[in-house]
Image (tube, rainbow, N blue to C red):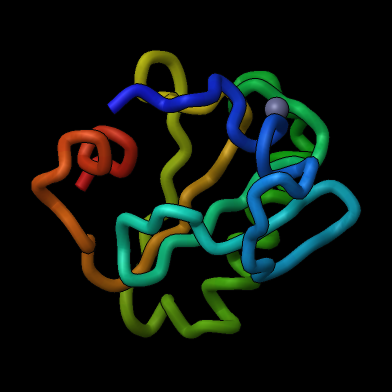
Length: 121
Ligand SMILES: [Zn+2]
């Protein structure tokens, strides 16, 4: 299943075209529930400004992204249950805008090859 957009986050999320349920927000970072979750809890954390992938992010942005990830993990006590943090690059990356997946609980559809590739089940 090929993605319809090369940059889903700029094209659809950051401009409000696709509504999302916010989890956390800072000046530079947005965290929200994945619009097509692959796990029981599936949160996406993105920079509000366009950054293509992890290798293009400055260290302050990387720190801010992971501060939000850790804040959500602690708030939801995922450290006492389960969590996985994944960001993809190169041919693993389906949307060319840096995004970090924070997932917890069970995979919803582990036989889906797209989900398996995106999230290294
Ligand atoms: Zn973008």
